[in-house]
Image 1 (cartoon, one colour):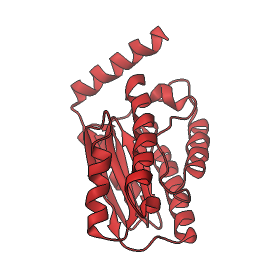
Image 2 (cartoon, one colour):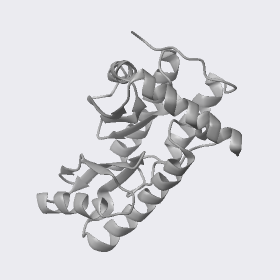
Image 3 (cartoon, rainbow, N blue to C red):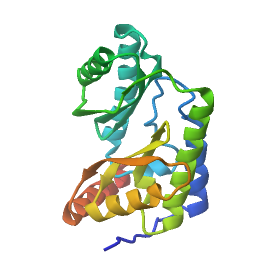
Image 4 (cartoon, rainbow, N blue to C red):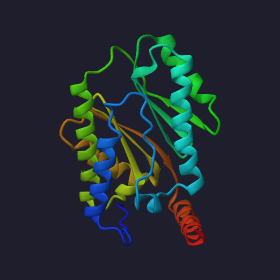
Length: 216
């Protein structure tokens, strides 16, 4: 069953504009990108606590720095952290580099787990990176247009046509988001890296976040 909720005080057009703007600013054209920074009003609707959002930003910055310092040919790696769970995407020259990258990131403070989607291959072209940024923007727009998906709670990462979805969702929400993303032109495959919760757990998370916002 699809779960429908209204987005309070934030218009769908405003969300779309913010999502697309952030996508272009944080596209795969920039190696070792830190892609977890919340944008404007969207931070309010995030299901992560403010502390987790801050830690995710720190994880991405620290992980990128450690990779540059400790791993040769780290320029093709992108780091995305959501609720202290890290997704690695991009390209590395060999399997040793792939394994070592995950180990380096796993040692960063506050990282709970590492989902290693690095591919052993040459770096993608600027054209592919631009196409990935466009796919990410279109997927985010499709999630908004779906109306039965809380698009602002889902992080979208695209690498070489493969779309990765991150967020704190119920199973029904995650399945629906993956279905919507899979129908977007140019998407070769959808990989879900969700943190699944029950509806009761989600209600508790949202209640805690509302209380946290009131204290600000």
